[in-house]
Length: 141
Image (tube, rainbow, N blue to C red; front, top):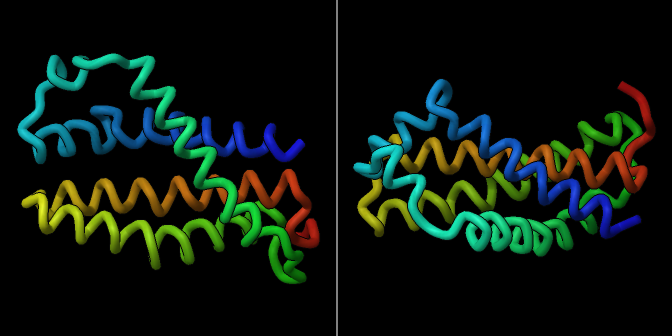
């Protein structure tokens, strides 16, 4: 059961990425911040890119599943997991790492904010999925 929840959480990164980086949301601004065109974005081995992303996201589920494994009297399992994922892992870890890398890689503020925001939301959803499937929380709310 643990590998199923890890796989679902990992796949959620692709689903959220599809929405987050869609041209009607942040995709156009993200590509512009990189000087990228839609043709540039379509280049590369998509199977390797997406396969690697899922494998790496599954690695990310390991510590996150541990963090959301305890119950919380005040939050539903999903919200408990979302909180741990978004705040502790997203805001306090992924966003600063993304910003530091972006600063030294000379990325625009737009690029940094779009990328960091993606990780905050994505880690929140991953945490929510893991907590729901492992019973972290009391079922309220």
